[in-house]
Length: 366
Image (cartoon, rainbow, N blue to C red; front, side, top):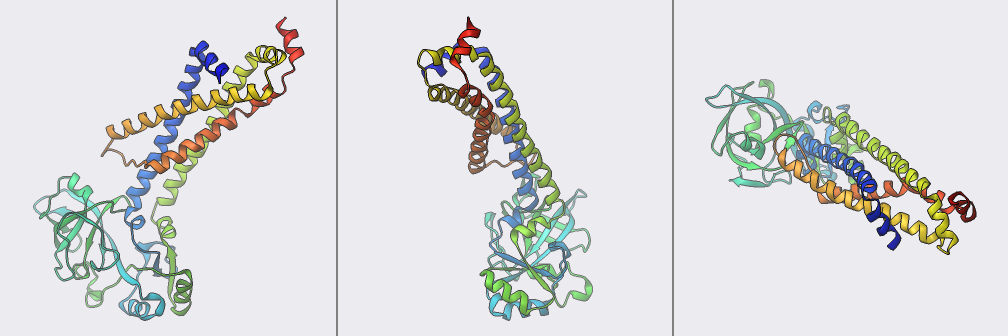
């Protein structure tokens, strides 16, 4: 490592330029990854945080909750089945609302639940609602950031139904809209007139083993049972949005591998004579290889540390402006991938170091 450190100190400008390029690439990778995670959470956190293994939807609903219509009769059939003993209904409806006394509109997703079931979200401020008061709801905290307070009354533009915000939840969004949880008494006011006596559900949340799921799907006709991951893919725009961002991240890693390969290869070619002389005076190939790997790892780790700091710094500046989420586990995964890409980029240089002929190198040096 002595040789590697001396070379890093001797050619500061050269390695600083390489490090700068690596910082920019790693920063871009981390930022786009955080943006992808943030958009995923903003689009579907209500489904991601749901304490359910499966969702029962209407057959041929294309895995889309908003296309599924389940009757009270079907819910009763699922509930009475041995595989549906840990099931609870769910109603989903996208609505346009206003604050009482205001004309400013906003979009939200109503989620009708049994507030004593596994679908009940965690309240971070206010008081949990019950299953009897039809005019009290739970609102996602993003509405508080927009100026809404506990006790504010919101009006559904389609039906004129009015609801009071009793509490705020956290991490509850659907299709880039805040989720407002209500009980099924409040849900009745949103139903078509023909269905007000008998609620219509969008899905049934279910916990159980894969065998129970298969038995339930086989015994009850007119339904399909999907996982939460499949439900996420069914949210409009989710698959396309995440696919585009993941493709960008993959290309950034590929570009990083090529850029680093070119930089280290050019530097290695410039030092061929010196490597040959070192071999001639007794330096082993493994020693030279270790020094090159140490240089690559040192530059990569320092660049990653700077990039992580820049990423979190920019995320603080953009907080509330763009959806951004970069948990430590994702940072660790991206860092390990970047280290692997850096080592892959140095393989061509390592090959040239291994193939150096001391006699030829001394001849060229002379």
